[in-house]
Image 1 (cartoon, rainbow, N blue to C red):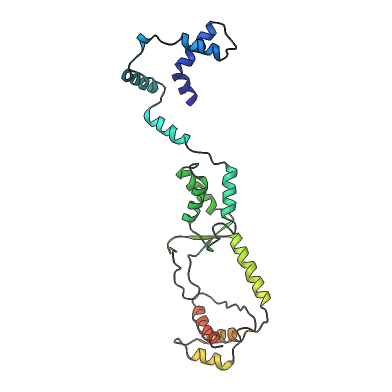
Image 2 (cartoon, rainbow, N blue to C red):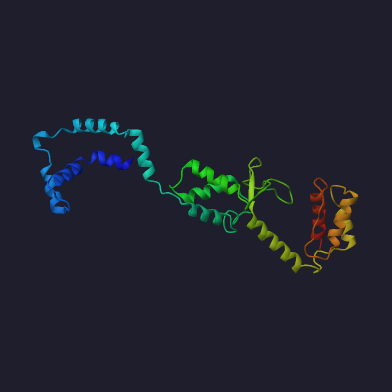
Length: 255
């Protein structure tokens, strides 16, 4: 389309080319083109004023479909660079790595993904393209949906986390956390840290503001007597894990 527009409005070039053809000049150099341009130039008396020219140009532009809206859209597109598929893949790989979206926080939201992709694309992508790319990233096998951030002790919502907005993490982040956790467990197995006496355990349980159930009492005593540097408390939702850990914390702080 742009080639057709250029050809339509390149009247001087067309006229010069026709002059050269009539003169049977095939391999025309700069000098021959200059003669052709001078030979086809309109006499001074035949020139039109600017207003008439602009009206004439506007009519000719409409004849080839070059309206102001079409021209504005073409200019806007010309300023965009096209983001190749390989570039998108490279950006996706980077932001889903351990130094990407989860570098500063273990989870992220859709807006975080959009921000990273938009920054990488610059002026090379439309809003629709970015939305489609965000959907691809969040639908990737390397992305794992998670609950919105809660403080593990208080259960309160972490700053900046919207409870109505889904959050995600990456498999790379989960693998890293698992590796660190397993390494820490193995390194501190049987180190005897955090062991308190039965007397201290009794005081911690008795001094709590909430009376523990039988299972909770047993869990707290097990944690305070465990000789491993890392102990795991597993129980179903609503079983009182947070309360039990709060009481165990009192015992550990008494050391």
